[in-house]
Image (cartoon, rainbow, N blue to C red):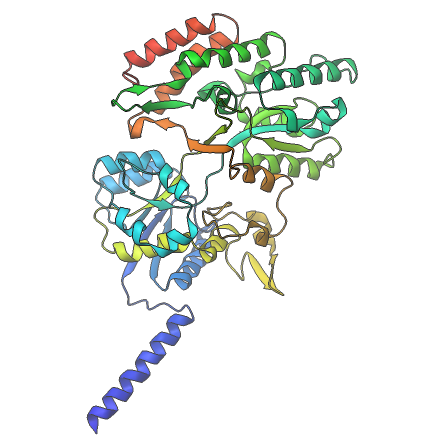
Length: 469
């Protein structure tokens, strides 16, 4: 009889436990999963607590979500160096290379290969971009977007330019010439410099080097030798094209001295430039700024373009370095940590990382999202404005900034290849590479030396600094 009662009580307790789990309630006596986060989470301490609770509800885990308010990279390395134990850490792609080489991260290859969540939600092409020595040491925080060509169609329409016909360096050159002539002679804007390109860090010239099938950075060839495509002889035509733009007054002189903020201000204020290269998200931000100012779409209607078509018929764009989640080698709870990585790749996790916390950032009304004032201020970004899940429909987030969805979709076109810059399998000193390339190639673009001489000088300095072989 007693045995029967014990069995009945166990069944009742099990039923209660399952019910609580189904409701998203977390057993705080369970293992504590410690997470160190950078951009992902709440916007302040109070909201971060709500984010933590929402993450617990979604995963059924007991989570401590520690978000670093500033200086994350330094804090991360200090904490790891001091031997602090975390189950999950946020890091960028280059940090993944560095820590992976040191043996500080768990190899997640087998887990990812066996994950149904990743198989259903994550594009294999995205996974290939974060391979390190043929293995995976991290999972995704979000889908990384890419810089692309942004053009103010409100201006080019006045000039009578069909943007769909732009696919070569000469197409863009002719477009810029026509716009310059129109703005100076018809609208009296003298001098008018139609194109801004940010030359420090040679950021971002990739849409133009696509024309000759080359990518920025340093790569390793089949023989294990490091090489830099932007100093390859095939790159000469692009450097000469840029120099021609500057020489003919088609490139804004502040490209060499200004900041990206200067470029962006010029772009959305409609009359200063007609074209730049900026992140796909900025296509929408330009238009949104103009809408706030009352100039969209009559004076500002920015659209994204893929740039120039390469020799093999594809457009080559450069993806931002991936923002990732890794499990440290000394993690106490790797199984639970990987469940969080999987959850962030689901549609439900995607909603949390974009729209935010239900009941705080938004409420559901008739199945549709209605944002609170806090949610509006947070701009659908709690770490992943563009979630990694290919099953997530961005339109569920409501109205997006004009043009942004069209720009982001360019990266999914069959004739567009999006990949990160070359980091030489994690060996590249990127800062030194930027400084050397910018120094020499600025001399070329400004006409102080020939493209051939500048490329040779850059190549020699890259080799002297052991950045290439």
